[in-house]
Amino acid sequence: MSRRLRSTTLVLISQMLLIALTFAWLLQMLIIAREGSAYFIENNKLILWGEVAVIAIIFVFALYVLVIQIRRLGERRADDRRN
Image (cartoon, rainbow, N blue to C red):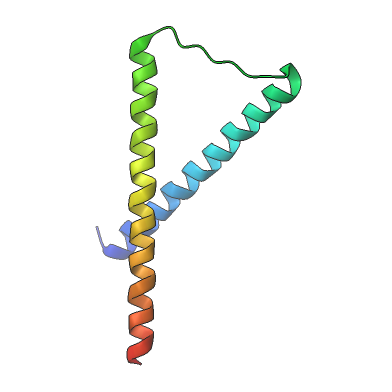
């Protein structure tokens, strides 16, 4: 996969995750507005740890995309200085 296509794919995935986070936050706030509070209980430990693992993977992915974007910003500035 070319560098540009990989970069575009990563940015699109990160934007989709941001939209999903926004939707989840909105849903959480609507539940709190309607009920006064929000309580979530997961009795199945396998599902609970699966959710924790997925959240950890998403967090690592977000950090990876952030580092790539910061490096690219530095590369562009270095190119601007040379010209």
